[in-house]
Image (cartoon, rainbow over the protein chains, first blue to last red):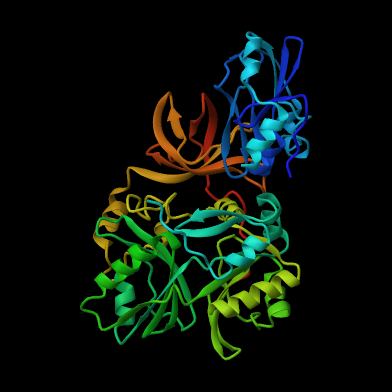
Length: 126
Length: 364
C-alpha cells in the first residue's frame, strides 16, 4: 500500500503540496514513485522560474521513461531541492521528504481545487 | 478495437510473482519484478533468467533449405558446421529490414529461424511467399515452443547445476539438441545482454519446469525492462528502434552482417549500392554532458537545425553515463562530432562515440 499523509493537498497528477504561509512545497507522492520505479533523474525548474497550476514544470525519470511533473500551484520558484541532483533515488526512499521545489504562491485560492488526503487515497485505489 | 494480448506459458508465474506487466509485440509481458536496476545488475554480475517465449520460431526443411535460407538472409551460412548459429537480417528488395533474426543450422536441409515477437505474422507471410519455387517446407512453430534466456557470468554453472544440462562444451553461437524427459530441447549459447548465457527452447510444460527450478534455486527473474538496458549498453539493435522497414542494416551500422560476396539474396542490389555509394544517415552512439536522459524520438541538432533523432537512450546502469543510439545525417556521424540533444525545453551538448557503451563479456 502506498503511503498518504494527512494535512497535505494532492493533485490528481500525483504531486503533493505542503503549504506554510505563502510558500508551497511540492513533491511527488509515494504512489507515483512506486509506479515509476527506480528514479534516476529529476529535471527541476530553476529558482526564479514562474510555474502555473496544471502546467509542466519539469520531469522525473525512471530507468525506463520520463514523466512530466505538473505543477499543482502557480507562482515563483524560490528554491529547488539540490540534493536530488546527486541523489534522485531519495524520491524512492521517501517521496514525502524528498521535495522538489518551493513556490511562492501567487494565488492561494488554487489550493481549493486540490484533493485532501482521503480523496487522493481513494483516487489511487481506483 | 483493442487486440487481445497473448499470454506466454509462464504468464501465471509472472503474475503470481508480482511482476509489472505490459504489452510488448502483442504479448502481455513482464517488464520488471523487483526493479530494472537490480535485475540489470544481476545479469551483469551474477545470473538472471528471462521469459522470451514471445519470440517466434520458424522451421525451414527440405532439399533446397540451404539455397532458400541464403536467398532470404543477408548473412552467409555457407560451409557452416551443423549446430552453428548466425545473426543477420531479412531485407526487402529496397534494402529496408523485414526483421533481424537468428538462423540455427540443424543441417544443410534444415534450419531453425528465431524471429521477433512483434513481427511473427509479417515474417511468416514473407518467408512463405518467398519460398515459392524452392523445394522446402516452412512451418511456423511459434506456438509450440516456450523459451527462457539464462544470462550472466554464472549462466553456465546455473544451467549445468540447476537444470542438469551439460552445456560447457557448447561454443558461442552454437547449439545442441538434447532429449530430456522424452522431448527435444534446444539449447544455444546466445543472448541479448552482452553477457555469457544460454537460450533454452522446449515445450510449454518443460519451460515451466525450467522456470520453477530456476526460481527455487534463487535465480533472479528479469523483465523486458532490463533486457532493453542490457542490449542497449552493448550496442545491440532493437527492431522498431534501430532497424525497421525504413532502416537498412547498412544505415543501422550493421553492415558486417551483410555478405555482399554471396551469389544472391533479396535486397542485395540495393544494399550493395548503399555500401558502395554510402548512405545519407547512420546509427551512431552519443554521449551527453550532464545528467539529462535522452529518450527515443528526441531531436538531435547542430546549430539549431535537426540532423537526427534518438533511437534508444538511457542513463547507463553499468557506467552511470547518459548515452544514446541515434540516427544522424551525414556528415555528423563521425566520431567526436559535437551535437546537441533537445530534451524538453533545453538542449544538451553531446558527442558522437562508438555505440558500444559497455564491453561484452562473451565466453568464446
